[in-house]
Amino acid sequence: MNKFSVIITAGGTSTRYGKENKLLEKINDKTVIEETVFKFSEFDEIDEIIIPANIQIKDKFKNILKNSKIVIIEGGSTRQKSVYNALKYVKNNYVMIHDGARPLVTKEIIKNTMNATVKYDAVSVMTKTTDTIKEVDDSGKIIRTIDRSKLYNTQTPQGFKTDLIKNAHEKLINGNYTDDCSMLEELNIPVYIVNGSYTNIKITVKNDLDFAKIYI
Image (cartoon, rainbow, N blue to C red; front, side):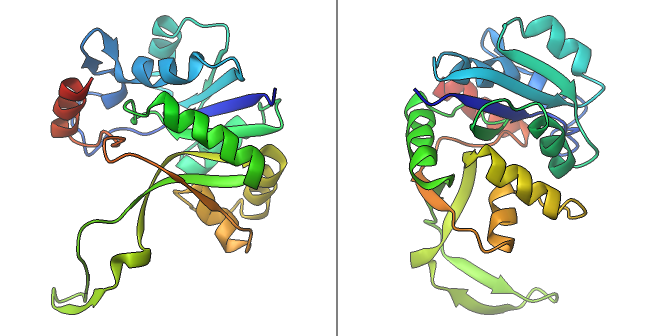
């Protein structure tokens, strides 16, 4: 059995959400971060969950996340720095990186991501774009309609061979990437698709939380 580590990012300040930190909001009887972590903690293949957390909520996480698999560390000033901090703790050959604010990820998606990571070394959960996409200039004028047949929306988890993504972070350490797969793309390293779900949303505004409550 191939063992996986999981990095669940939680270093943001929820500025678009409001005064509360969205990861501590409740979906029924669990907080968002608890719901997210629970989805991964059920797998035998996953024996390590590393959470780089915003320093303001780090202690709160320690109080509510009671599981021997979980390690809570201090996050960095950017998502990239938070992930790199967490990668230093990873002990397994494979790692998945997931947004703490995506509690609706399914166990099927997680399992498919692990299988694809072992096969391809670098994968991202994605959904095919269904909306018509327009390119617009700075004045607000539409320039053109972009062919959506090859466009996909990026989600998480993203899975990697640990050495591969860690080396990418070290080579691009001065960057400000908000997506780990884009770092591999920058280095011309192939990344493959795992089919996601349109319900695997990232909670960004309060309406997203309402949707999550209904869905769960």
